[in-house]
Image (cartoon, rainbow, N blue to C red; front, top):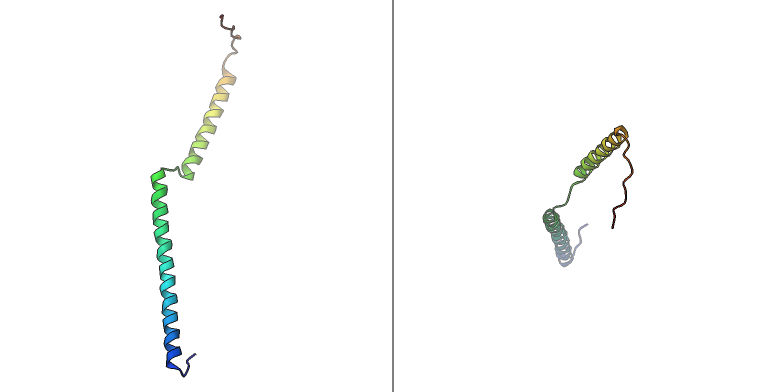
Length: 84
């Protein structure tokens, strides 16, 4: 919409430019925050989810193996308490 007043037209253009600048600054700030957060997380040396899932599967397999070995082993005699 165009008005007959050039002052209002100029104010509308300036306001529009200021809003665009504010939006760009906001996006730039978000990008900088993401970069800093990624750098911080990388410094923490965190474990990724897929690595944890692989370890859980390995531990479950080892537990099954231990249980089967215990079941196959002959029963042991009870230990005597240590003398004091």
